[in-house]
Amino acid sequence: MLSTIAVAATALLPLALAQTESNETVLGVYMFHRHGDRTAKSTPPANLTDLGYAEVYTSGQYYRNRYISSDATYRINGINADLVKQSQIAVSAPADTVLQNSAMGFLQGLYPPVGDAMGTQTLRNGTNVTSPLNGYQLIPISLVSSGTGSEDAGWLQSTSNCAKATISSNNYFNSEEYLNYLNSTQDFYNNILPVINATFNASQDSFKNAYTIFDLINVALIHNSTISGADLLTNETFFQLRTLADAHEWGLAYNASDDMRAITGKTLAGQIVEFLNTTITGKGKSKIGVQFGAYGTFASFFGLADLPMVNPDFTGVADYASAMTFELFTNTSATISSTSYPSADEIYVRFLFHNGTTSNTSEPVAYPLFGSGMEALSWNDFTNGMNNFAIGSTEKWCTECGNFTGTCAAYAPASSSSSSNDGSSSGSGGNGLSPAVNGVIGAMVTLAVILGLEAIILLVGGLRVVSKKRLQSPVSSLSENAGTKA
Ligand SMILES: *[C@@H]1O[C@H](CO)[C@@H](O)[C@H](O)[C@H]1NC(C)=O
Ligand SMILES: *[C@@H]1O[C@H](CO)[C@@H](O)[C@H](O)[C@H]1NC(C)=O
Ligand SMILES: *[C@@H]1O[C@H](CO)[C@@H](O)[C@H](O)[C@H]1NC(C)=O
Ligand SMILES: *[C@@H]1O[C@H](CO)[C@@H](O)[C@H](O)[C@H]1NC(C)=O
Ligand SMILES: *[C@@H]1O[C@H](CO)[C@@H](O)[C@H](O)[C@H]1NC(C)=O
Ligand SMILES: *[C@@H]1O[C@H](CO)[C@@H](O)[C@H](O)[C@H]1NC(C)=O
Ligand SMILES: *[C@@H]1O[C@H](CO)[C@@H](O)[C@H](O)[C@H]1NC(C)=O
Ligand SMILES: *[C@@H]1O[C@H](CO)[C@@H](O)[C@H](O)[C@H]1NC(C)=O
Ligand SMILES: *[C@@H]1O[C@H](CO)[C@@H](O)[C@H](O)[C@H]1NC(C)=O
Ligand SMILES: *[C@@H]1O[C@H](CO)[C@@H](O)[C@H](O)[C@H]1NC(C)=O
Ligand SMILES: *[C@@H]1O[C@H](CO)[C@@H](O)[C@H](O)[C@H]1NC(C)=O
Ligand SMILES: CC(=O)N[C@H]1CO[C@H](CO)[C@@H](O)[C@@H]1O
Image 1 (tube, protein in one colour):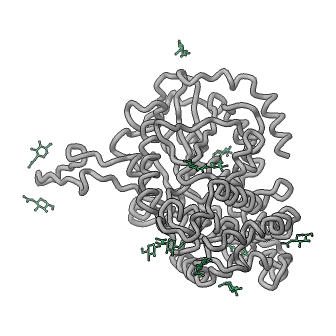
Image 2 (image 1 turned 90 degrees about the vertical axis):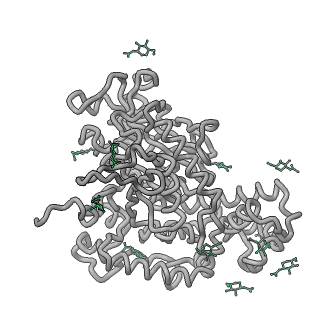
Image 3 (image 1 turned 120 degrees about the vertical axis):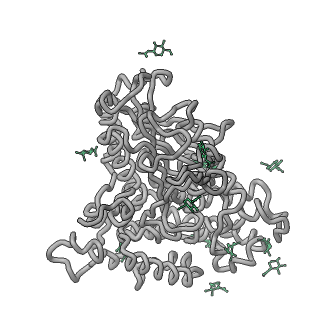
C-alpha cells in the first residue's frame, strides 16, 4: 500500500525539486522530540539529568535560531520573536517526568527570558511589575493521553493502551527472528552479567531484555565512574549491545505486514496532519506544534513513512534529544498576511530529522517521505501519504485498536458488547501477554500499579485516556478563556 503511494507521489511531483530555500517562506512547523539524557529505566523513577536538560535546552536554542528569532534562517511567517504569543504555539507531552521536564527545558531555549524591559507591565496605579527570573516566560504543556510513564516502562507498547497494537508487539516475541536472536546471543549476554548483576539476575540476562540492558549500561558509561566489570565493556561489546537493542526495539515498534504495531506512529501522523491543516485553515494563527515522546514513536513513524529504505540507520533507536520536524512552506519570499495567504496547492512540506541534540554545528537533514525520492512534497501528496496510515479520530483509534470499552464504548459494534471486548483474547497467556513479555514486565509490577492509579486519576480528573488526544482541544483546558456562561 505504501509503495503504491510512493509511485503515485513520484509521478505527481515533478516540480517539487525546483523549490529553492531562498525563495521560501515557512508557514508552520510540527516537531516531535525525544527527551534528553536521563537515568536508567531499570532504576525507576527515571529522571532527566543536568546533561539531558542542557541537551534539550541547546536544541531549543537551535530551533529558536532556525524558526523564531527576528533573524532566524527559516523564520516562521509572522511568529512572535521574543514575547511568546500563546495562540501561536502548542506544546504537548505524555504524563511522564522525563518527557515533561524535557519539554520545559526545550521551551527555555525556544523562548528564553525576555529581560526586565520587555518583561515588565505597568499597572493602572502606575506601578511597574517585572516577571520573576528576568522575564521568564510561561508556556503550557498539554498532556497527550498515550505514553504515560514511558520513560519508566521497559516495554513501550504497554503505554500505548491499544489492544491490537499490544497483541501485535507481543507477537514479535514468538517470531523466528526474535527466537534466533534469543538463542544466538545468549553466550554474549552471559559474558556481560558481571556488569549488570546489581540489577539483572541470570535468568533476566538475555536478548529478552536487550533494550533495558543496553539502557542500563549506556547510562552507566555516561555517569558511573565505578562500573563493576568495566573491562568487559569494550567498544565492540557496547556496539553489539546497541545493535541488539536496536533490533529488539525495531521488532516491537514496526512490522511491515502488521502495521498496527506502529500505533504510536499512526496517531502521531494524525496529530501532525491535524496541526498543520489547522495552520492552513486558520491562515497561520497557529504556527508551531511541539510534542515530546519516546523513541518507539520515532521508530514506528519511520517504518510507516518508508524511511529505512532511504537510510538503514532509521531502524536504530534515535539518540537522546533527537528531533523530527515537518516544515510547512510556500514558494515565495514575500511577506504573507491573512489576506494574501497561499492556497493549499501552493503549500509544500519538508521532513527533517536530526539524530541526537541539534545544534549550530550539527543541523537537521531533509529526507524523502513515503519512498517518494522528493525532499519537498505538495501538501496534497503529503496528506495523502500520511492519511494512508494516520489515525486522526477517536472512532478510528477505537475501531482499529479493537478497544470498545470506556471512552470507546460509543463505537462498539452492535453485536459485540460482551465478547472479545478488546481483542485481548487472542494473546497467548492468561493475561493476554506472552510469557516473554511477562518477563520484561515482571520487574515492573509495582510500577504498573502506580501507572494504573494514574490512569484512574486521569479518568476521574476528566481527561481522556484515549490515544487520539487532540492538541489544545479539550474544552476543559480552556477554562480561563471561557465566557461566563454557556
Ligand atoms: C530520581 O529522582 C528521585 C527524586 O526526585 C529519586 O528518588 C530517584 O532515586 C532518582 N532516580 C535515579 C535513578 O537517580
Ligand atoms: C498598585 O497596585 C498594586 C496591585 O493592586 C498594589 O500591590 C500596589 O501596592 C499599588 N501601588 C500603589 C503605590 O498604590
Ligand atoms: C514604569 O515604566 C514606564 C515605561 O518603562 C516608565 O515610563 C515609568 O516611569 C515607570 N514607572 C515607575 C513608577 O517606575
Ligand atoms: C484497550 O484494551 C487494552 C487491552 O485490554 C487495555 O489494556 C487498554 O487499557 C484499553 N485502552 C483503553 C483506552 O481503553
Ligand atoms: C540454539 O539452538 C540450537 C539448535 O536449535 C541448540 O542446539 C542450542 O542448544 C540452542 N542454544 C541455546 C543457547 O539455547
Ligand atoms: C556481580 O559479579 C561480580 C563478578 O562476578 C561479583 O564480584 C559481584 O559480587 C556480583 N554482584 C552481585 C550483586 O551479585
Ligand atoms: C530473577 O528476578 C526475577 C524478578 O525479580 C525473579 O522473578 C526470578 O525468580 C529471578 N530469577 C533467578 C534465577 O533468581
Ligand atoms: C555504579 O555501578 C556500580 C556497579 O556497577 C553500582 O553499584 C553503583 O550503584 C553505580 N552508581 C551509580 C551512581 O549508579
Ligand atoms: C572506543 O571509542 C572511543 C570513543 O568512540 C575512542 O575514543 C576510543 O579510542 C575507542 N577505544 C578503542 C580501544 O577502540
Ligand atoms: C483540513 O481541515 C478542513 C476543515 O476542517 C477539512 O475539511 C479538511 O478535510 C482537512 N484536510 C486534511 C488534509 O485533513
Ligand atoms: C542514531 O544514531 C545511533 C548511533 O548513535 C544509531 O545506532 C541509530 O541507528 C541512529 N538512528 C537514526 C534514526 O538515525
Ligand atoms: C520569484 C523569486 O523570488 N525569485 C528569486 C529566487 O531567489 C533568487 C536567488 O536568491 C532570486 O534571484 C530570485 O529573484
